[in-house]
Image (cartoon, rainbow, N blue to C red; front, top):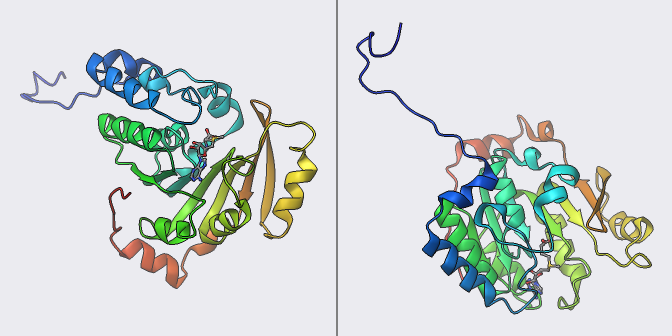
Length: 251
Ligand SMILES: C[S@@+](CC[C@H](N)C(=O)[O-])C[C@H]1O[C@@H](n2cnc3c(N)ncnc32)[C@H](O)[C@@H]1O
C-alpha cells in the first residue's frame, strides 16, 4: 500500500549526494570566500585538495584516502589532527562517522578555512591555532581537548618549521588512547622504513602496521590499544556516562 493510500501525509525524505558532488550545491560566494581565505596561507597555499569544496592541491584525496588510509576505525571516536592544514584528514574522519574532531595548526588562514568548511557542512569540527614551537603547546592543546582516541600525525615529524619534534610526538603518543595515523616525509635517503621504526621503538606500540606509501611518504598505523581493551573498566564506564564537554576554538 502506498503512503498516500494509508493516509500518511508526511514522510521523511533523504537525498544522497556524493562527497565529490557537494561542491555543485555550494553557494558561489562561500567557495569564493573560502578560496580567498585559503590563498592567505603563508605556507604552501596549494597543499591539500578538498574535494567537497573544489579546492585543488598537491596532496590529493586519491589515493590518500581511497587506497592508503582507512579512517572507518574512527567511527564514534574522538579524533585530533596535529598539523591539520586545511583539515583534509578531519573531513575524512567526519565522513567516516567520527564523534568529535579537533584540528591544530599554526597557520591562521588554514584554520580559518577549515572553520568555514566545518560550518558549511555542519560538521562541528573544532579548529585551533597552536604553535608547536611554543613552550606552552601542551597546555594550549589540553585547554581545548583533554582526551582523544585517535591522533593524526601526517607529514609532521620532519616538517622543517617545527624546531623540536620529539616532545611533540611524545605528547601525542602519551595522550592518545587508541592509535595514531602516522605519515613520514619523502626523502628516499632519510625517510626509510628503518628510520621510522627506530623512532617508534621507544614507544612500545602494541602494533605497527605499514600501510604503503602515500605520495612517496611511508604511512603507518600505530596502535596503542584495541577497542575492546577498555570495556568494563572504570575509565570506560565513566566515559560513557559523562556528557562530553565541547570547548570552542581558541587563539
Ligand atoms: C607538511 S604539512 C602536513 C599537513 C597535513 N598534516 C597533511 O599531511 O596533509 C605540515 C603542516 O604543519 C603545520 N606547521 C608547521 N609548523 C608548525 C608549528 N610550529 N605549529 C603548528 N603547526 C605547524 C603547517 O602549517 C602545515 O599545515
